[in-house]
Image (tube, rainbow, N blue to C red; front, side):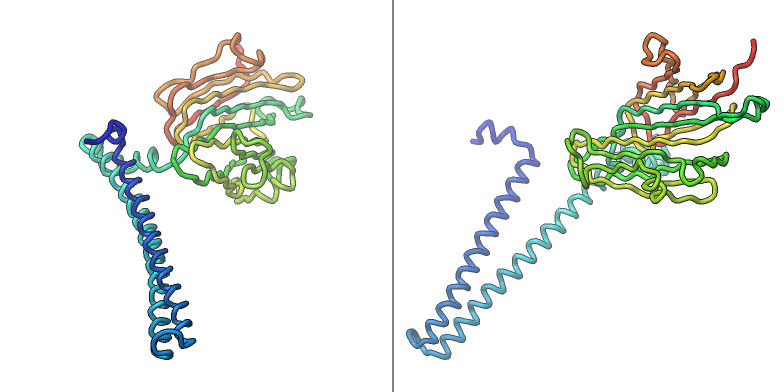
Length: 339
């Protein structure tokens, strides 16, 4: 009769223990066979010295048998490693296929197959979930514009996006980031790149070094990492290895020129848990702007009351709901109109 401990074991644990037992048994057999082969080779040279059996025939016979034992061990080990790796790859592929089949079986009765496939690719294939998304805008009027009519003036907009990307798998995977920005209005100050800072760092690791942190902050670093085509600027793909359940902190700062009446959009390429959007105005005099937010989400952004803001001159909105890939927020602004 099985003990309570054995009864409580999951099938996966039983299977893992069986695999480890088989591997230990295989290693023991290979070591014994290798030892026999080495012993036969050693004994063949003792025979060659004329101490046992026919000197020439015994030597070559034992030598060949010993070499055959050792060769067999090498071949068996190579085949075992190959078959084990192929088996693990096959099992992983089966897991993916089973998960996809179950997902399609659950939703396929009510939703067209092409939509089910798109849902699966968007929700289950990505290996990261974003948390603590914080999008900040800072608006400041360009200097020497007082003589221009309002519709001809421009604003300098500083945008900062930060978030945590958590690895939700049980394996070490690569987190990649290749931010891009479309610049509609030429900016002599930022003609080379609109990117002002990029940080990607493993969370909770002190003294992050190579392989744990990427930080582009000097004009040369950002210039060398930026490619452009027409109005589109893009940072070259940056990659960090992230362990199971680890998170990577990402920060991106962008500087660009916008009109006094304009709009900006941000979407997430991964599923996310929450989002905060904030705007503030700066300069002398302060630009007299009004803001309006919208979202590609079934829930609306909620305005944070003045008592809950860190900066009383800022405006904040929150979306405290799960966010699906390629959902996001839109910010619109214009000069305040008289009532």
